[in-house]
Image 1: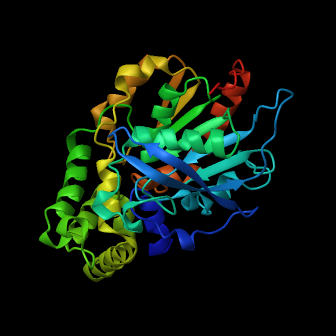
Image 2 (image 1 turned 30 degrees about the vertical axis):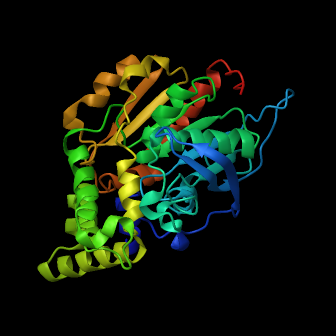
Image 3 (image 1 turned 120 degrees about the vertical axis):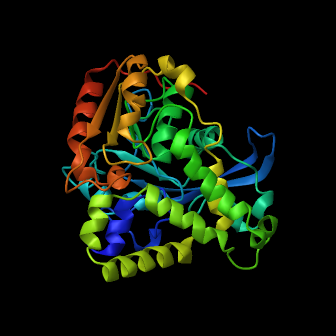
Length: 367
């Protein structure tokens, strides 16, 4: 596995090189949906919110005209829907005969607010861009589906890292909308401990750098480098990095390649906003509201959501049809980035799809 592929696997929490993502078959259809006068929870209003998306397959409607085969896949912080077109993810799930075969399912891969080709601070508003949060991002995804794509029901909602957290929010905010939920690499509680500290390191490294200049920098501020350093450590796998860089010289080359690659693609304002968006995330009070079968998957070498905290084991008991799988550390896992290696966990997805087929069909969401 070369460094470029390794880093993709290491984390979708970091900015990914979406243009280089390997394409699955069939090729995706891309589009933009514009929401007029989108009001954020902060009270700010954006006259035009552009939401970029990719789709695979075609919607199939039942006798009542309700789409029954739609699958929503949600990306991590700093990524985009294009990341799921990689061989490690889409190549394991979307091809003919696979679990989410695009000839059977209508797969929707949106770019979240502030990410990819959707509206974001670097488009021009910089630090004047509305201070969005996860609820805003999920609301925008809902409007893309219902108003833009005519989808009022989902067969499955799944997501990685931030997308995993969005999956928990989806289950609470629109409990009748889906048949099944699969959050990966996430916890259903407010972000605290080292996870919150990591985000403060990223945010403060940028915001406290005089070169940031209240978002009006002419070149990327030096604090962006410190932010990337933090993310590399928290989202990586010690076992895999030792294999990739077994000597001092190899480790230096490895580190330089990772950092330079990230800095070429990153924007300080976009990163600051993306990590700040998690500030009030906390699905814990309403976990009992989730109705669809839910399967949460984490990996034992994930330093962002370390298993020794025992949080998911405790909270999953409050989800009426919830289950939890912890992937053990192995030669195949990649720390936090295990969320994007579908070969490792797709057998569990198969079980969830089978379980939710036996479940009573949810009624289409009325809006």
